[in-house]
Image 1: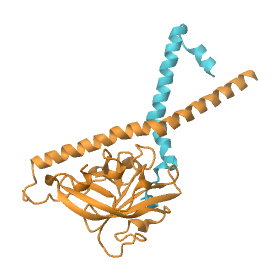
Image 2: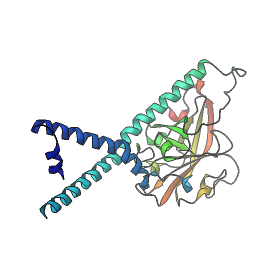
Image 3: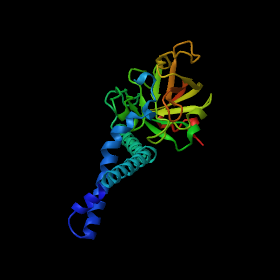
Image 4: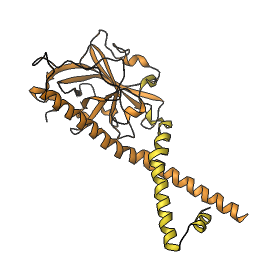
Length: 53
Length: 226
């Protein structure tokens, strides 16, 4: 999977490494900004009220 | 065959990395975010109170400021609990939905307002989102819970707690809370959080009664002086 992505990135080795880094940062950003805030309330740490009022 | 094995193992590593990142998010990042968001709420409140003091509402130049209804999701008070440390102060917002509790402590809608007859009920996170009520079990009888709405300092004194109960026990936030030991109507305050620390099977409760009030112009109440 990752080797397939690597092969399909344009440019030489340095350009590929740079693009990979940008991609990784973008994925982490999306996870922290959108995916984790959505998933976090599914965990029990939010239940601090009686009868979920 | 080799491609399949490699792809599956790559996927496993990816899922593992995402799980580790999620743990970092829950344990660390929500705290970082909560600290700045709560500071921002407190700043906003102080700025608002300053403005109101500069331009008192017409009709009551010297009398107590008329209380406005608490707006859902907005801060209306700052709470201090000396037992949690002298630097511990958190904004109190109206409502107890997860989005509100991310920004501070949440006041149960339809419970009494500060200083009023009845029961002021406030919920807070024990863990994650800045761990506001992390030291909840250390609260003892006689501890002060000081709240200000910008015009008045309200000093509540804890009478009973921490009391462990089940999440469906909504009578703990009644105007005269059941099992609190109070028998007559009065001016009470109830704090709730989760128990155990990382779980949600139970709730921890403390009850307090209004001990004293004083206008902000007279300075900090006794309980907050070092």
